[in-house]
Length: 123
Image 1: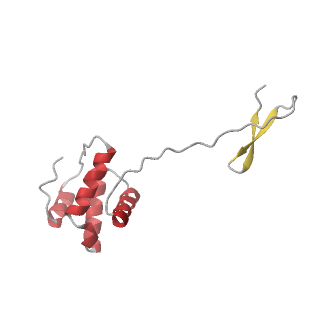
Image 2 (image 1 turned 180 degrees about the vertical axis):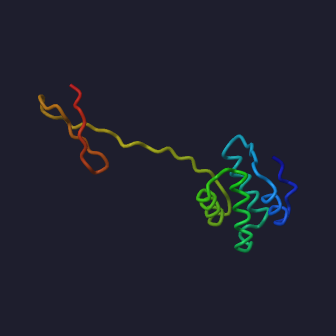
């Protein structure tokens, strides 16, 4: 998609009113974040009025497919740091640790995030 023709807020408004479905082809999320930052800088997002900020938010949501909450989170990051950076995180699962029990018991107790859970003991 080529968005270089959109230079003013009126053009963005006309674009949003005139399109139904738009496909946005950026391969990596990192490149998508760079494009988002470019749009926020290009339209001087931090200096816009509230209604114009809403217009840019709608534009970003429509082209990226991000939810309103995601766009708000990214704009908050831009407002705070002046740039958008993707922070890739991996969520660690809760480790399952078995407690040794005397033989003959069919179950072992395991701590699970502060609570006790019951699992079948491996014999």
